[in-house]
Image 1 (cartoon, rainbow, N blue to C red):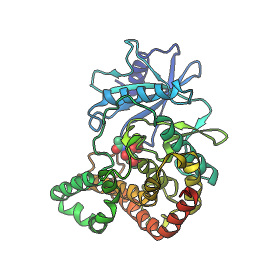
Image 2 (cartoon, rainbow, N blue to C red):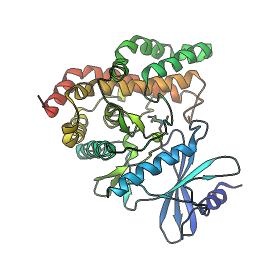
Image 3 (cartoon, protein in one colour):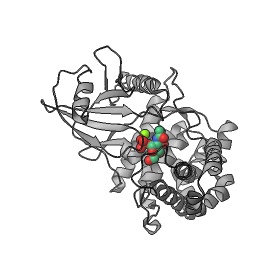
Image 4 (cartoon, rainbow, N blue to C red):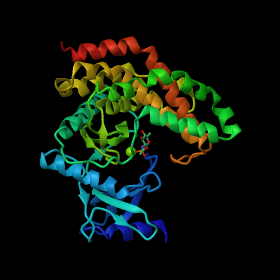
Length: 357
Ligand code: GN1
Ligand code: MG
């Protein structure tokens, strides 16, 4: 079936009173397919097809999202609103076994692929911290959608398996970054160790706080977090580090020219101020002490996952060309080096903002 027709058929199975006119494709996701639905009444929706190869428990993904958004709505906090199907469930399984969900599009909103000003970085800090604060009293269970998602030891196990099975050609092309990954392993295990020793607590985290997952209004004020697919248990460091790796990168995530990659310290400062504005009162000194390293760790773990997928012949992330995952890996690892160069500054700045006995 032609895509437009298929999307219209899917859309019509959800409970809306609006009539499908056309759709547009959102291109920024690496895993799922997301479409903007424009109706004849000019009311818009977001239709998402969940990749069931990656998300084996796709119905649980939707259940988690419903639970979290209901929790936020009940507290009067703006969030995305999912629409049930005519069968009164929040997902639809099509004839090809794909799983779809629909949400309202928040009008007059925008997302950014790159940060353009200090204020946007500050707003991003505020909203990612607010998400953590507003979900901290969430008591019902969330399904562990992708177990060990941000576990470094798990990602190294996957990397080692990929090394065993990779083609000689891909290994040779990636050699520099394979060496980089192995040389940095010890340093990058710090957060895992702190979690295992229970030095930092687990709570509900978003787990994919890249800048394009934050919705802004047309005055550039942050509205809410979107893409709640990986909301699970984690630590604040996952969300803090992951946000900064995209906010402060002076290049896009897949920029192949490493000379364009740098870590923007102004955006780091602004994001951190926003992030710690209210959250600082709710986190311990020990938790705060791991914030600086989390920026490196989260950037590194993305590099490691891209490298692993390159060695696995691109089975996980969508790619546009054969070197795409390798470009992404070299990009993230180069950014790790840039972050390391700024380590003393980063540590000092966080200390002055946190500023607790
Ligand atoms: C993936 O699909 P997307 O773009 O929302 C990935 C994240 C990575 C991100 C890198 C389920 O997110 O962990 O940070 O790519 N999501 C999953 O940009 O693996
Ligand atoms: Mg995501």
